[in-house]
Image: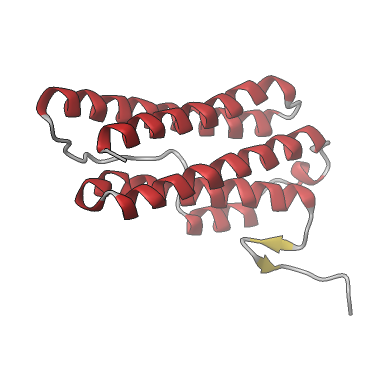
Length: 167
């Protein structure tokens, strides 16, 4: 795969994920849940804008300079600390629709993350463009999984058992 093809495919992945988040907002009754999807959707739009700029740069100059890519989603450590301070109202809300949307979002995030990892491996030096995306998408995946675990009351948070129903 060429770098241009990889960037175009990355844009398609980001659009799919963005649309999944933004199209879910109206289906979620809880204000906090809607805000989560809005922030994730905007983060994905920022990725689209970044990739489109890199594609234009590639078309004009035949090269791409990786620029700083940021994310509205905090680090995994920050997410862990924040969940410890979640408001009690989260445990009382009806989160069925939100959980369904989060499951879909998680699958899309994992697919996108795998794509970026593959591009880093396959494209060599040019694949470095996607290194920041790997890190950011890992954060998105962790964030969505944390939300889903919390709402599902699985007893797990970031793959660590928080509690057990056994003695």
